[in-house]
Length: 589
Image (cartoon, rainbow, N blue to C red; front, side):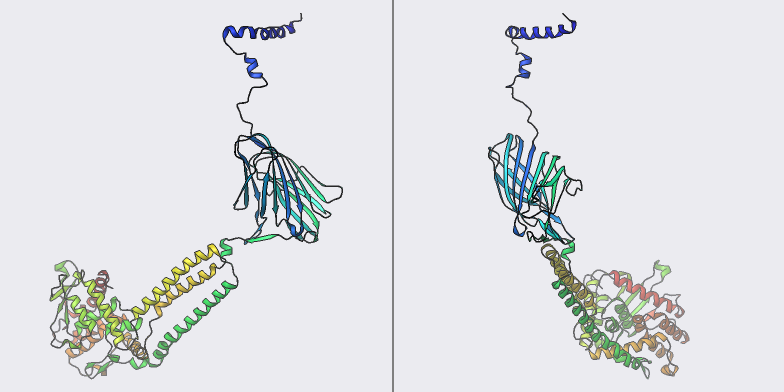
């Protein structure tokens, strides 16, 4: 016997003895268990599409009626899923859509037949399910309609459709037949990713050129077969379907409604500017004509007579329509000059810091005080516990002073109305317009968001935002002076020009005695504080005091022991700065 046949004979002998030895050792023949034809498999076969065959017929209006026959290898799932590409971005603002309708499913061999469709962005997901897990091959037949597949392309109509694809499993074979109902001019197809330019396995027309046939072998999960068919112009009369896409670009697009809204906004802005010009322009015109009337030394004999009797604290509110820190500082200096309080500069060498004491003076006739001046005196000389005090250091202003100072500021606004310079309080006018502007802005923001989400008119909301912002900003300029207020403003501006020159004509003071001259020049100083020319007029007062024999202090300002009037200008400059700082830190303004 040849040597090569011995292993074969041994194997046959062992196979023959195994049935006899099995009962003795209680074993099951391993070869039979492994190779028996009736042994069930313990590993489920992977699912796939054996064949996806699509028959598509184009009717009038470009409506495609489709029958899709799917041979599917199930591995234990209850159904199958396929995603149709039903939306493509055509432009920044439009999508081309291919809606699918009238979907029905059936199966001749017990496959799934329950249909459910959902839309996800550019895809329409089709699920066909059954009542129990399935194994083996089943056939599922889908019938549905697709619209918008045809688009005029010059001398032809073009049908383009991703007829097969969107599977989560591989496809062994895909076949598409397109019946155009008219002679087909040309055909083409692409396979692979959605926008692939790679041709499919095979494509051709039948002998009558009325059908296009497209075949693709072996498609991976997620790949598509796109077919293209050219038909004679007017063969179906179909047109593409476009849908407005809601994006930031479309939400803020320019259209009839938004143009009208923006035109209205422009008209309102022009009207608002015109109104401001009429209000502000009147002030400018009156100032230009009558400012010269106030540009002279406000002296009548030996008396100081400011233009229109305006006081320092009123000037700031009149000019910029705000009662602010510098107006209160000027009023404190004015009350000292008029004899209602005394300013005492402390000895810096002794205290270790620069500070001033304000001491209240008893005046026999305080009736010449305006309401805001009385409130300011009370604020200065009322202790935090409510008790009256005779003096207070500038550094100690705080506590209840802020609350009382707010009342002073309110009284200053009331005063300019009582004087007939404003029809309404400037701060109230500003607040009303500002609040209205802020409310309009908030409504505009909310409206813009809502319109952007639901419509193409978000520019209308943006116009409202701009209008609200303009109203908020313009509200700061809305307080309007009366005709009398404009005249007083003109005289005040002329008075400022006189103070800025810092010179008093020689004939204005005449042959006044030194105390009278000091008192007269001192009256100018509070106004200089308001207009920012303290240095010039403090020097004028200093010079007048130095020429007075035996004058070491002023009747309203006293320095420390080693202090003399030659230091007054610098002391006054420092005092105004320190006072303004103390008032600001009190947070009452």
